Image (cartoon, rainbow, N blue to C red):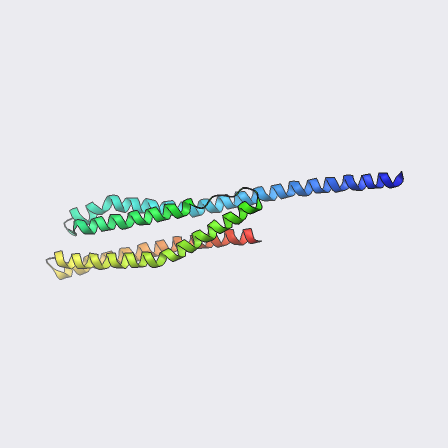
Length: 193
């Protein structure tokens, strides 16, 4: 009889401990999800800032590059600028849309980690395409500025301004890029722990 009561007590203690551990695991999963939600929001905010800048360029490009007598660049250049921005906007939105918050299951966490790794990989690969596009765009801009300018000196000043703008935009873009990569690394390391 005494053995049964000891066994019953042990079972009771085991069940109580198991319930506490299950509750603790649920709390940890909730905290992890809140952390991922915060980090994903920071990543997506950078993406939406890029999208907003791209939309701004699409709207302003005709006024700045074609109708502005200082530039007077061709409609082909303006259209290429708008197409380039539209492509950048589409890829940015598409890649970030693929990353969704996980639910509490382990398989969902693995899928989330894979989607974050994919975002990181695509974002890193995008740099070479962006560099090629911006280089071609700047060369085209220089050719048009020198072709349309009465004074070569004026074209040099305009091109210098374009290069300075591209440099500033590049620095801002790289800063955003490295922040996204760092957040992706942080999320991946938290999942793998």
